[in-house]
Amino acid sequence: MTSRRDLGPAATLRRLLVGRVQALFHDRAKGESPIVRSTDALFAPDSVIWRVHGDVTTMMIGGVTALLLQMLHPAALAGVWDHSTFRNDMLGRLRRTARFIAVTTYAERGQADAAIDKVRAVHEYVQGTLADGTPYRASDPHLLAWVHVCEAIGFLDAWIAYGEPGMSTADQDAYMREAGLVARRLGADPVPETRAQAESLIASFRPELHVDQRTRQVARMVLSQPSPSLAAAPAQHLLFQAAVDLMPPWAQALHGRHLSLPATPLVRGGAMAMSRTLQWAFAPARRLPPAG
Picture 1 (cartoon, helix red, strand yellow):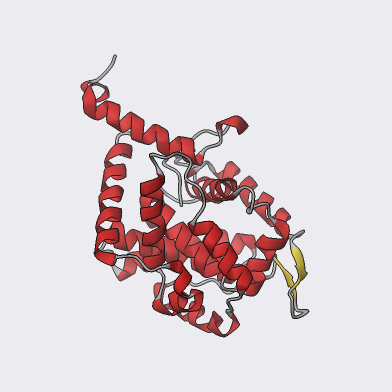
Picture 2 (tube, rainbow, N blue to C red):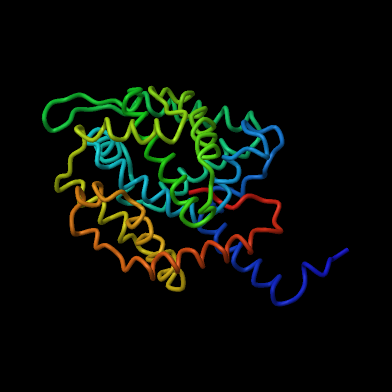
């Protein structure tokens, strides 16, 4: 039987919004469909990570922030540059990252285990040499720690900014502990267990960070990638500007002026409105909106 909730203009708008977001993040040509939440996931339904990773807008903002931070490390940038097709398939890379986060957060445990094993296997083949002759490998625990802490702090800060401004320190620490479970299984070390430890870890990496012409080129590619549709272009631009705004000032300074800092009040207001709209759209759905 059809309920009243399934009828009317509001329900039609919900379905339209959910359908467009899911089409963006799930490649139907490969048979992908939205991840179904499972009570047998790595994390319990009442976990903080379920709450943080369940908001599509904040995950997209935080994901782009994380990318811009990660590429400041020469080895992280080299791994993507030398061993990825991102230059020809940026959307595909973002889709794969979003799906990995969704699977390891919400899917049943067997799917999460398989996804983690697959990424670990891929990392074993990603290695090379930096321009200064320094060898790098994606399976390096130290490098994995940098990639992880950028993602964790990016997702968490986006959630606080646009999802839960009053989030307690205890819940922020709980998120770090939960997110660390997957990072450890991928081989990262050290892995922060509190917000303070995450900030300290990022600070310890700063002497290793560097920006060159390749960094700037990749950043421009991330921020200027074509929108999947003309209608989505304004929203995409807004989210990317919000991601830049979310970066710490020292990271913005490293990237330089080419990031074009946004008109902060307008961007923050627009991103907040978008987050609230998509939260409303996905609220009745049992299927998972894509993560980050």
